[in-house]
Length: 350
Image 1: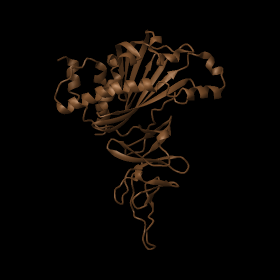
Image 2 (image 1 turned 90 degrees about the vertical axis):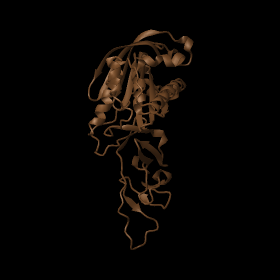
Image 3 (image 1 turned 60 degrees about the vertical axis):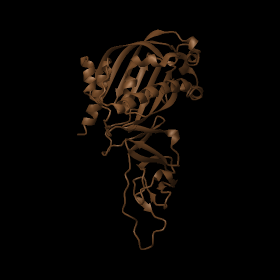
Image 4 (image 1 turned 45 degrees about the vertical axis):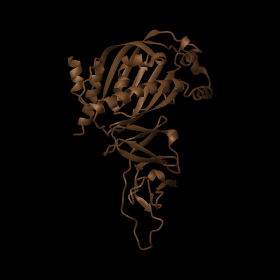
């Protein structure tokens, strides 16, 4: 076995937890209304809701009375009401009302956990760590930028999050995607890494070039695509991922690890219109209309890629569960760096 394969084998990350002292994405903004929504981030059940002003709040998804889910309840004003007995809790997790409380009784002195939460760039970012956050969410600067068209796909895989990250960092798996792939002939050039991120720099052949008014039609008609060389850069910025393919495309994967064998994530694809230098001369309202009208233009393509990736990732997890000692023979040195970063982030907690 090569030394590279041995390095991967001695770095078994399939049982690793997460470093909770980061911002994770738990929902899209549009998914959270004044009706509570239940989500899970690494075994922690959380109820998300908007108050009467539209502000997002996050509380542990349990009523301390009988331990049922608060996400089954409703929002009354600025408080979250349990569906079972009508106990109400404010955004700090304090019990503020019990409807059948006797005149001579005090409110129960129970407190449920609140989580720091932010709404930014179309997503709900949550900080599951015990301390108050000292950092900020990764963010998507292209989300509001008028020169970028966004498409979003949801990833739900029955596998540890490490499998998803490795899939995203390993550009040699383009072979899997056949007619759906955006690149070909990837070749790893070099890797930059520190305690927070791994950047893998590939060269590749891109199928797309967004430089003419009809270029976006390449997303729908494979016959219009022509291979040409472009740099392909992928980055694991713990706990999320991003990539750029030349100047035309930027992709993010925002993670929400659920458990050792389940991962949810949001894949956001941005098509750049920066090559159209006259675009900035158009009225803002018209540019925003174009951006909004083309939202999710690449969604079908993106979802096709996701289905193929999930099938492989889930199979990797099942193979591991059947025989955790079975050896892999890995040749991509970027994955060694990725696993090292995963381990170091969790070891920080010890």
